Amino acid sequence: MRPTFPGVAVPTFLSPYRPARTVRTVVATALVAVTAVAAAPAASAQFGQLGPSQPLVPGSPMKEPVANMTEPNWSGLDVREASALTGDLALPDSAGKAMTEVPLDAPMHMPDASLNQRFLYSTVDQHGNIAGATSAVYLPKGEAPAEGWPVIAWAHGTVGIGDDCTPSAGHRNDADYLNHWLSRGYGVVAPDYTGLGTPGLMSYFNGKATATSVVDAVVAAGDLQSTSDQLSTKWAVVGQSQGGGAALHVAHDAAGRSTDAGLDYRGAVATGAPAYIEELALVSGPNFPPVPLGGSINAYLAYSIAGFREAHPEIDVDAALTEEGRRIADAAETSCLRELRQALNSTNIATAFNRPLASVPGLERALRDYMATPTDGYDRPVFLGHGYTDLDVPSPIGLTMNSEVWINQFAGSNEQVEVHWYPQDHSGTVWASTADSEPFLRRIFA
Image (cartoon, rainbow, N blue to C red):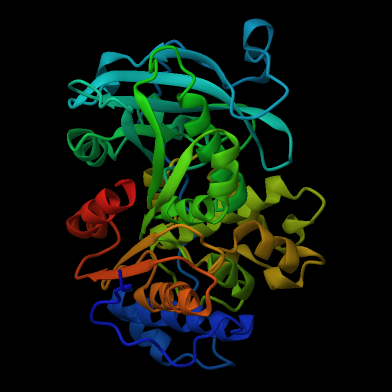
């Protein structure tokens, strides 16, 4: 089938060899444009007068984040502390092993699920060590097909990086979307990502670590006693926002690992996928951004800094942070998205830095490896969906990445790629895309 790119002209400047400086310019320009539209009128007016010798718009210091509004419900499986992973729950020697499972408490049930379970499994964390991670698994109602329910691995969007934000413990704002796929006859495996509800910190925007936890969850789910051969070996990954980026990392590496585990990986759906976040981080410093950005983008940057700092203790990230910057990064380690977004809504993240972040020795190369999303090397079909009015991942940034992934298939470095655009914002794209992602999934599962 011919790949589609509805209604969008492909920029001629894009190529697989596009220099990082070009993308960095696109990212910075996109953020400036979005800020001019979305910021308060006074800030926009002042931004229009900014010049090299003029002061920045500092905004307000971060407000003290309120307590997280959602109290976790662990359904009897509380493994936040390393001391819990002993005895019968001692970590195995390899990844992808189911360790234990419990029924989810009734408030966390999906209306369209016949089975609602929470399970612990082994994976590999951002430090290369065997670690525990948790996931939910849901089975549709009705009799399973002879080969089992086809599996969707759901890669969730940003919720935060602290334990209170764990989706399977009740921080679940995607229930309607998961019910949608259950009602269509898909089993759903919904990993929390390593560090959410388990020892350590979730490695935010670390695509490789997150993808590993997703693949290992799918492998382990098939070995649970509760699923008892009701899951097919065929599976695909679907992700939104942070999870859209995770889905692309899964898509890049899943086929080989999946085959080794006796599974049949079919393809990926990624909506609102963050692109070139590493470039945004690398242009950050005491002079950029020039005005306060939205609370969501500030929160994403704060989570990124906190996650990278934990993953790379050998790099002195704090050397580039002001006292306010360290306070923001520390708050990001425990505050969930809703609370951190409110706390940072009028803050200029530039006040977090005393020097350009990219000036820290060893940081740029490590940050690219930590965050960058590959645009080639996909050997299974990929579906990309993005909103024209997305302010969380501004559409010029999405256009750049989506175009590059799409173009690379003609160089033989990607399988079939579909790119779809919708007149929606970041969250609205998820539902709007189902009109196209449903038939896409039916095709790749056939």
